[in-house]
Length: 607
Image 1: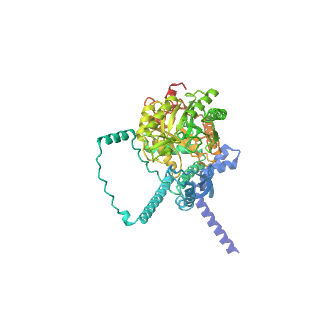
Image 2: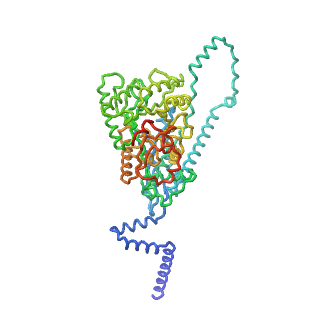
């Protein structure tokens, strides 16, 4: 018995020694002594909550443990892919976030519905398979590294698909077809002087329309890249326990410090310092009326009529004003005895779909509604028109079909816009008035109306292409393989006003786009009409962010709508509610502090 007891005592002594050495190596006695001293000094009401929060700060940083991809339905009832991120926190795996981005297809794409099922299925397989292994153990705070891995994966799959398509093409073509010589050109025929003059006059009157640039192909499964990028962004904010817009702003500021010489990192704690940096909320551009090719009526040119609020209005005030105006427009159309714009229904994007034959009909109705409500056009309200001209080109005839049976050449469309804008100066912005290929017409219209109207180009399908000449604003949509780092890069480098827009097939309850727009420091945000859960949730989130910034006293108030006209580029377009404590703002170029305006006259008005 004595021998057995001594053996047990020796084993207990050894375990105590090993435990003491283990605790000493991990500095447990020092940490316990520190926290006990703080408990005694502070005497918190929730003693165990204080201890839990203290030790949570000492826990190992979270790492991505697994990913999960699932099929969900978007607001339009179409299949979409949702990415979920899981992390190990305090030795337990937790679901941290989920995100889904819409899949956009080029205008020239056909049989989209048939490809959507394969697209979503492939994306889910990527997330649950190779991407799950690729991002395991990754730090969710390192957004740039995660996005780079996602881009490398996408590039490899894109090259594989391209090589496969090239191989199929070679297999389907016979050797004779592959090496067939081009036929020699026919001999030139001499024409009489009279016929040559007639042909010359015809060519001068109608120039050949430039062919369409090839659209960027949508790789099957590419939505997995964009969904995962946003999900990791939301995970980083959740782990830090800070709002998503602040986490996004921190990532953008980090990129600016790396790319802008002379910028120094904050001297104090980064998160604490950012809590005192003034933040501006993007101006809400609300879709008031919708038309386009899919709407009833003969007219196809105007896809959207968008309301631009005046300076100094809060988000809640903008929404209230727009709802009142929308009700008045509907009342006028439903009671009007005039022909034309007299049919309204609510569409899936939350705006009123209108049947009209001439664009003047829409603008006249809005003018009448504003007069009835006492809203001053040109001061309290401006308008933007989304022309969506690339969708209207008839390539067989080389003209735009602006309405049923009515064709306009690019030069004729310039004259049409000039006449419309001269009659309605309240219209201060045109979105996609031409195809990107009609660069001469972009420049002509800008030379004619550039002082009173800004031209905006949609970059959704051409992120890396140079902007059309004369374009002073750009629309971004986070779709397919676009990563958060891509959005940060474009928002930081693009010389012009950046506007983030949404598509009709958005996840119904995901309001993260509002946070991303605020965090990127964008000038405008276009979320759609005021109907439907998919848009109202985003507007409500903007209201919450703005109220939070007001409570903290760090909301940046605008003195004028952003402008980049030469006379205004050197003047700040907005005033900070508090002194500017951000070291990066002082050395940023003027175009980021004063971006494209929708009304040059507003800049001279008092705040």
